[in-house]
Image 1 (tube, rainbow, N blue to C red):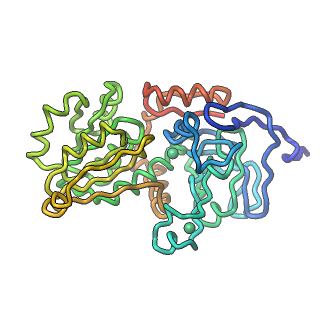
Image 2 (image 1 turned 90 degrees about the horizontal axis):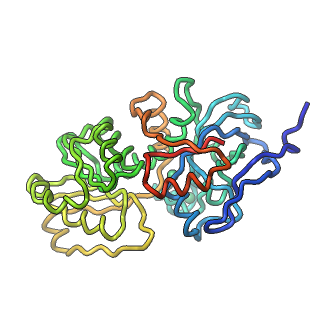
Image 3 (image 1 turned 60 degrees about the vertical axis):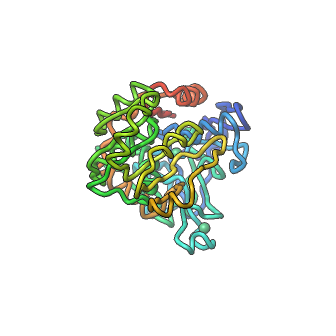
Length: 348
Ligand SMILES: [Zn+2]
Ligand SMILES: [Zn+2]
């Protein structure tokens, strides 16, 4: 019988901006209550691209990035998980005891265990799943009919659900999604398929992504450079929800110009260079505006995302447009940044 701990496996090791090498490392060892998975698909997340390009203070180094993961249990020290089980693993495990967690803000836990940030992630053949993830119900089985790629999309669905829930989209609402990246396309599916909003407009830059937004259920798409001509009709109709999936200087300015009475705005995408918001207190007061940000997700929303995706209540087949091998991780990250294609995955 071979013993896994002596096995060498391939992993893409990150050592700082632009430094990723695919190398042979010892297979991760697991403790009681943990499982080891053979990674089958990893979604390339904009966060990975940011870390790869510019680094991040919240990332330990060296580390293996990649937190949108599906895989197969190959070793188990948790009786609830048999070898061979197909699973998705959440990206983050909150401590549930810090002051944020106690206030119901477990998505911004101050002692978060985060895969690909302070726990080795999934751009690797094998990944250890720490006990905290298993104890908190953050590892869930995938039905056979859900592909590895689809399974890896549960995490972006969960963070999207969190953001959208904060602005409570209603069936009569006009919603404007700013941005046309893979997360924006997931928002389109959720806004139409789960929240059932009346009218959904996507503002973006890339024709192929705007076409995909229409395929995914958007009622209208507007190219950024045509927004000025269209904004009056949107303002007259009244934008109920503004969903910023990107928050660079231009997109923030565009979004602010669409705020009208009663608009509820959520900032979902983080800004690489921070952008100040200019809005008058009276506009917020007399216009009854809501502004919120969103990051991460909660345990319940993760479980809800798993339910929606594994029952195909949110059908994301068609979102993954490009696939890369583990040795092509850098290429995959560069490709995701280029905004070609839709969603990329790495198949280790
Ligand atoms: Zn992600
Ligand atoms: Zn906490």
